[in-house]
Amino acid sequence: MNSTSLAVESEPSEPARRYRFFPGWTMVAIAAAALFMSAPGQSYSVAAFKEPMRESLRISETSFSLAYAFATIISGALLPMVGRLLDRQGARRLLPAIALLLGLACLGMSRVSSLGSLYFGFSFVRSLGQGALTLVAAWMVSEWFSRRRGFATAISGLGGSLSVMSIPLVNAYVISQFGWQTGWIVLGIAVWGLLLLPSMVLVRNRPRDLGLLPDGDDIEQREQTSPEEEPSADRSEAAQQNAPLEPQWEVTSVLRDPTFWKLLAVPATSGMVGTGLVFHAVSLLGSRGVAPGWALSLISLQALVASCTALIAGWLTDHYPARYLLSTAMLLLAVAGTTVLVMPFTILAILYAALLGLHGAILRSTGMVVWINYYGLANQGTIRGIAMAVMVFAAAVGPLPLALSIDWFATYDIALYAFIAVPAVSSVLVWTAGPPRLQPTN
View 1: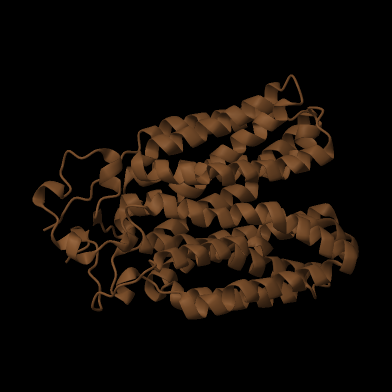
View 2: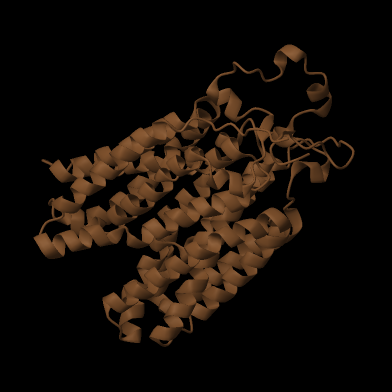
């Protein structure tokens, strides 16, 4: 079969077996654990180490930030290659290797003693944690689920939300009691404890490896499906994008597809605007009269809202067209920017955090599965890796507009106008990104 044909979901490679519990949900739990333990490479975790490490190494804030930005760029550049390797080797081989290396990278961070070693250490924890683990987690869920892909992805995404709410507090406690070096050691041991053994024993790449179909569908029922129940040309867009018949795109075809570039507006905008707003949360909200402690607590509130609405977002992903949900996410980001720009009362900071949380819930469900729903599973790691690389690169420059605005104009308002306009334009652009059609070749 050539790459331009429609491929039916792969039949099991082994005889069908009966499972009282669909193993796909075990993969979802491991994916959630992977997202939870991506923390060593995430900004919300590193933030707790910033001041104690900077003071210990006797480096400036600019030097520390440049090292982190450099590592972020390295992480983004490696993502497409990691995705390609994932498509070839699968999560069963890759996830234990990543977990082992990330734990070692955390131990290495505990021994950082110079600016050069900081660059080196950050590059490893960012590439393995924020980059590779996140990519593998999404890959696993997409392989094991089709009809319920959005819902399953939302459940796994709860691991990331719980990480945002808990890891910074754990880091702060360990650092205050035992020092930042011990903080990194604890993270490394946690990565090994939660990921290494479970990924070695339990992970399987695809349902057919166990003689199963995605979603735990019954093979006999699938074979007995009547013609009236098969996908038809006039099905709704939401049904089409989650149908058993999925187009299997080559990467070169994806890169030539206009829809792909429209969809990239979502990770690019979310990476730049979302990161910029969170990175400057204390000073930005402080300029609106919000106390620093309250500003930090709003980050946890944002994660809480995302967690509480994640399953709803996942259900919507399975039942409504992705482009409408992603367009809504962009509008939520624009409204959040407008809220902080015009904020007449500090109590509206709660609304601001809630809007960012709702945006995050859609991004962690619809934003994660749209690439597979539109372009199939054959090269999902590579395609998603490109999209994640775009988000990472955008996140690397996200804090800059607000920093330049306050330095040059003594106000954040100039950058906020841009942070409102960009997601508004992205919302319109994504609205037009209907499911692409892969034309067969002779």
